[in-house]
Length: 230
Image (cartoon, rainbow, N blue to C red; front, top):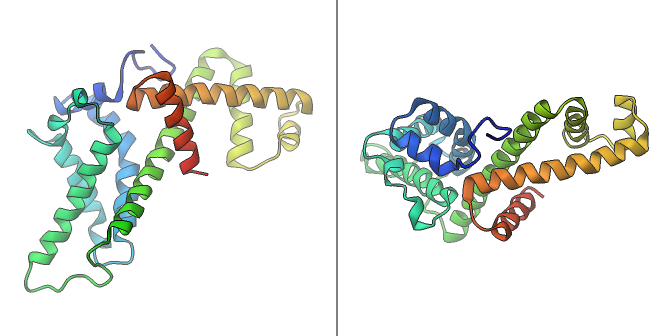
C-alpha cells in the first residue's frame, strides 16, 4: 500500500478499467479526480458565449459518456500507449462539440453570440487550459499524497507539510514561517528543503500513477507540470 491507501502497483488505468466495469469506488475516485479538469476546460471554452448556461449539463454528459455501457471508458486501451490525459481531453472536447452542433442544428435558433468556428490557434489555447487544469489536479493530489504519508510518519513530517502550506498557499517567507511555528529560522530552512524533497517524491509517484513510463519520462512530466503553472 502507499500513503494514498491505494495498492502500490495501481495506476490510473486500474481506476479507469474498474470504473468502466461499474465498480462504484472506482467511479467515485474517477469523478473526484477529473471533475475539476472537465469543468475548467468547458468553462473556458464557453466563457462569454451563449453556451455558458449549458456547462453543468455538459459536465454531466462527459461522465455519463464515460460510464455508460459501451461508453468512452470501455473504449480506453492502455495497451495503445496513449496518455490518459490525451484520451480524456478527446472525450471532453467531443462532448463540447456535440453540444455546439446540437444548438446549430436547431433552425429556429441562431448560433449563440460570442461563439464562432475556432481557429487551430484558439483550439491550441484551449488545450493549454485543459493541460493547466490537469497540472493543478495532479499537484493537489501530490500534496494530498504527501500529507497522508506524513500522517503515518508523525509530528515532524506533518510540520513539514505545514511549512509548505504556509510558504506556498499563504506566501510567507521562511523566516515568518519559523516565527509562526515557533521554530529556529535555520531549522525551518532545513525542514523546508526536506519538505520540498518529500513533495517531489510524492509528485513523482502521482505522475507515475497517471502516466507510467520510465523514470526519465516521469521526471520530465513532473517538470512539465510545474512549468505549466509557472
